[in-house]
Amino acid sequence: MSTPLPHTVRGEADGRPPVVLLHGFAGDALGWTSVQLALERRRRSIAFDLPGHGRALAWPEIGHAGLAAKAVTASLDALDLPAVHLVGHSMGGAVAALIALRDPGRIASLTLVAPGGFGRDINHRLLRRFAAARAESEIAPLLEQFFGYSARLPRRMAAQIALGRDEPGRIEALTTVAEAILDGEGQRTVDRDGIGALTAPVRVIWGEDDRVLPVRQSEGLAGAIAVHRFAGVGHMPHLEVPSAVARVVAEQIATA
Image (tube, rainbow, N blue to C red; front, side, top):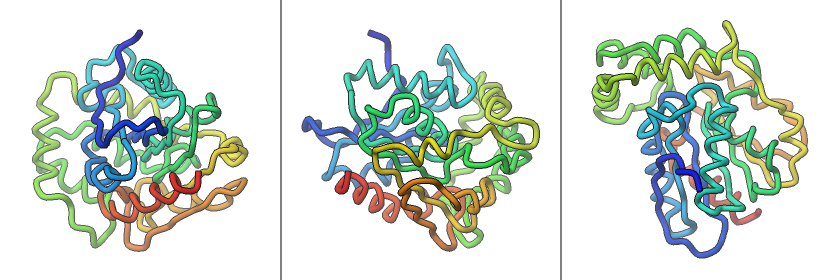
């Protein structure tokens, strides 16, 4: 049995499919803490660190969303999880979408938070600059662009990110991943029509003030996909309005 990706578990196992949470580019499992706490009494949840991120910095294969999807699928096998409620943010949304398309029978439900791959447009300059930034003074003004215009950033977030960038290989890994998910000035895309054809329920969450991936990419989705758009929210709904995101996930679980 292979070793699963590093992960954080909350809630008790009860035989029902758990909620599996996949973070976005340059994030880690800790970004889901508020959502996990909100779901803790409802359902067991598992937040993974994706390859090249968090505790998976030295993962053997680091790169595009397809590689991360392969690693997550192997991790689900290692943890003996034949069915899951899958939730993914940004790059993690693209990873979640690929897993669902490749192995639809495993997906009890799919919730995508400002997912990558829903269109070519992406703020490629921001991602590249953020991947290479090391000092707090560089990181802070870039970090603001991931949030809504009036959002209050988590206290000392920029300082904590800068501290992590001192770890050998961290910036190199982020740069590698950034170039793998980007395609010149755009991003690689996923099969939106295939997602709409899934039999499992699908929900999409997006902030109307997203400056990384435009909210218009949530329009014109095929199938019976429920779309939740939040005014005044940027690219980080799970950090900006975690209670609302947890509520959508809980509704998704209840109706699946």
